Length: 112
Length: 79
Image 1 (cartoon, rainbow over the protein chains, first blue to last red):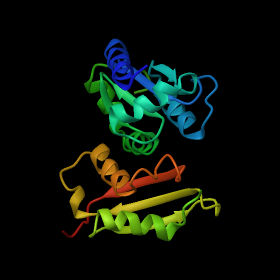
Image 2: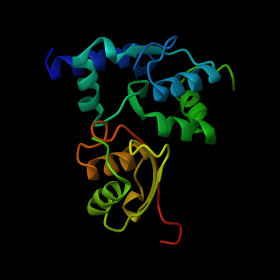
Image 3: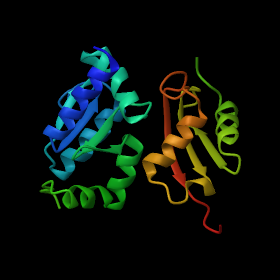
Image 4: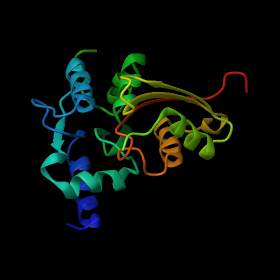
């Protein structure tokens, strides 16, 4: 798939699902500590999300980086918007901003 | 190819000349670092934009030569 086709796929995915995490491995078996950390945070908040394993698709693994102009994985999207990678998600979780952002976008945060 | 801390600091300062950079080698393996970057250029930017500015300064090394850089950005308090 070309970059444009991959970008189209990503755009569709992040508009069809309120919370999407592009990650290495799956939510049940993360293959990288950074991905695992974000899965843990979303699980702690009780937020439902769609995990997309970039290791299954080399085109996606590159395409997601050019899509967001962000060089690393994981990448968290809420309501079609790029929120950040592991460091930002961690920082936002520690300050309570992440739960606020999710709630303000209409995503259920059961642990709140 | 791992990068050393001095090289990371140099690249960041080339891209953000006013930056104060504190780098910690988390495991002593030259591959896992934490960097705290303070620059007035971050003012008014979102966190994503601030991190993108640092990644740009690192010129493609992030996610490639540099596997793991835990990044924290902030604006100077007194400026």
